[in-house]
Image (cartoon, rainbow, N blue to C red; front, side, top):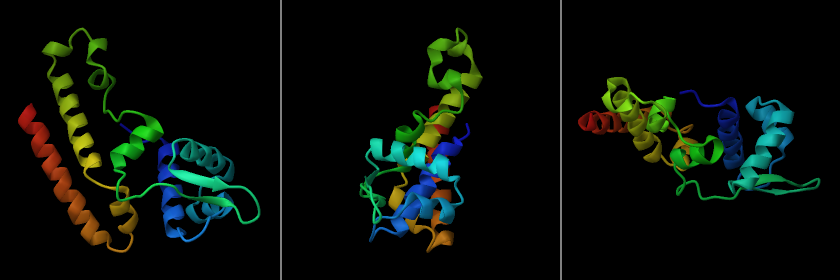
Length: 158
């Protein structure tokens, strides 16, 4: 599984909006700050507004601003909104597509990986990620612990 570049850029746009939360920030400023091609950032801004993650205002003092409380949105919520279900394999996401899935150890392993990813991404709020810039070592330890717990749970189900 690889996150789409669009999803990575959307996360970076949200990070910039969070940093500038006291005001509307222009997509041009975000584009420069986060090193995102301007035209691409504009289309992603539209996606983020459509999904309700940002609100936008036109004009010289316009731009975008977070429209969600990052403490209530998980990384999994964000990924689902931006690129749909998170899966390491097509056969894990839709087991009925493969006639061998019921007797395939790989399929069970891919499904366990999907559960581990969902558990991990669902246990981390956007707020935790956005605040991580201030305490990256603490965030890394927290993510490592949550990842270990998610893998342990998924392995128990194998």
